[in-house]
Length: 118
Image (cartoon, rainbow, N blue to C red; front, side, top):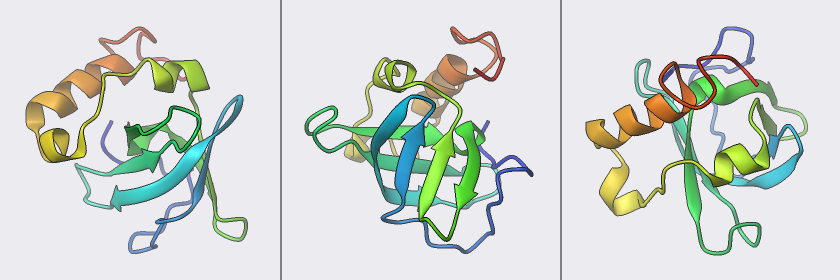
């Protein structure tokens, strides 16, 4: 859940800050922060006007492809699935194992997607 798929095209050490993030059905915002840590990789996405004033945290396993030339990251979830994810507050949730478990359950085996990639 908290690592990039080998097929995503992620190169450790690449600064993804500012990359546009695309859900399966449209743009959701830009990367504001990211982690490359092997068991704790994620993206914090500023959703801008899409969900005004909200950030979302996406586990690295939701990344299906990174296009370095276009500076775009494609995730394998819809905008509604991301919008309905457990609420994220940077000061409260970054590094919080309980929040990571909750988010992992939402996006992973225990979540509404039954562990399948949608």
